[in-house]
Amino acid sequence: MAKSINRYFHFLASSKGAKPSGRLWYPAADVYQTPDGWLVKVELAGVSAEDVEIDIQGNVLYIAGCRRDKSCSVGLTYQQMEITYSRFEKTLSFPASIDGAHIEHNFDNGLLIIHLKKGA
Image 1 (cartoon, rainbow, N blue to C red):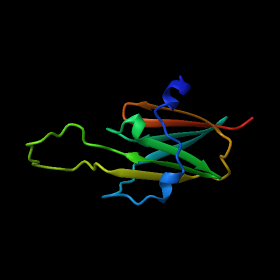
Image 2: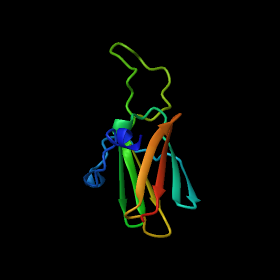
Image 3: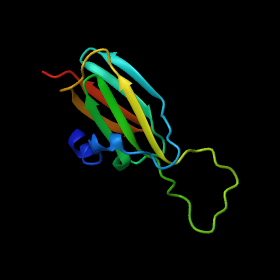
Image 4: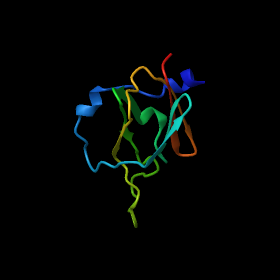
């Protein structure tokens, strides 16, 4: 199953140098230590899997992407706008290197769930 989900994710370190166009937002995340590694939950309601990038460097997990407003059409006038539609970033530091960790991830009810399993 993880392989089928992998095709929607881009592991691009090159995007970290890019400057955001517009307001950058920082999604909330929970991190849990498990017997075989780590479990990370990131709140990404309304974000498509193909718009998410994940990268690991040393002890840092970098998650970035974009939430797009796909429901607006020409001729609409907004009355109230509270949801941020733009690029987001989340950088999480771990107490030890996570390089070489086996990554499994999926979306579940607006949450990006990432399992980082210790390398063999």
